[in-house]
Image (tube, rainbow, N blue to C red; front, side, top):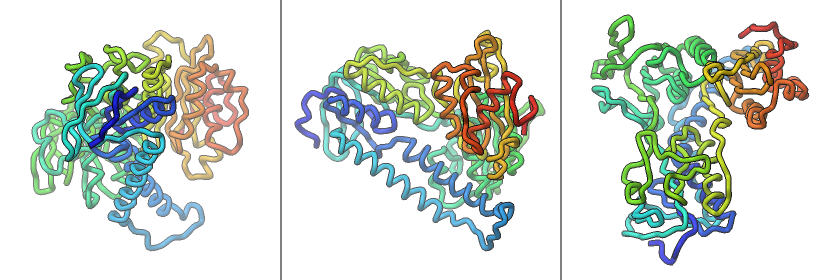
Length: 471
């Protein structure tokens, strides 16, 4: 049992991206800090999210490159998928990253407490330690970073065996022969890329009219085309009504404006979103407001109760990098700072093949908010570096305010989009204009030239493409 902690400056509930970042930052600022974590540190991201999925996606990418290496004048024979080896590497990398987070906490003087926590007041927390008993902790400030869990929709059959959450899909011993993925958001699209690359017959079902409904319309529509080209069967405007057993594995009833259709698959993956972990936290005891979407916070990441903060998924976030940023803000404010998080500049990334990345407003959002916009586009098919990489699918799209030229949003579908978006994030965050970016000099030949060319296209002066030409 942890003893002798005394009164803490900051107590963090949850050791995921938001929690461990907040703890380390609070310790850097001189605070006496502890983290309570009931499972493994690193949270969803490290254990069953970002790290394991990107590890597997890299294996799929490598397999795809080897299969197409003849295009580069390279001949390879005898290529085969070792699924067990692939999963072993995934576990090794996850364990390495978990160990590194533990190391960082220790070296920064953060006390890690293994157990389940619940607030008993705005300043006190009761912890049930694993195998150790009960512990009462008191802190000047509390940061709630308990993350989220997969949402299981209220559909008959959703609890059947072989109906998987994203967590369970990452623990499979073999790639299924066929898989129906319910949900065409970021998670569903990533798993569609992953399993189709492993040779699984994939059907992706989305109830909205296009994939990635929260992103720019052109991006979602184009991604659908590219996934179809890779063998994924995509159905949009379709709802799943029920799941039942069949000789194939699972029978899924789909409804659309055409009527009801039944399809079969060995397994079904539920990729319908996540719900914040707010249960059994004692939020009522501390007077902290919460709802179905989590714990409301202001720009300081503070709840309705002074000196009680919430960050990451439990506060309505969606991304690990959003949790990191929120954790820094909460820690600084918990120790007397005055930091804020600008959610409008948080990037969104989808690690499909090719990748999707965006920051700021979509074209639809900009117009809905009353902006008079100018849109620029540039296809990777006109980018020399993309052509040399045999990765010339997709495009960059820029949305700018027509009068001021301010960049309102940047959207990328293409190779290494998650890396390319960083320059656009800086530009949007600094409220840069089209002219500001147009005057920058970008190295050649690089993929990043596509961003500048899309900006130039806003002014109808892109050099390497005709206006409105897409790949």
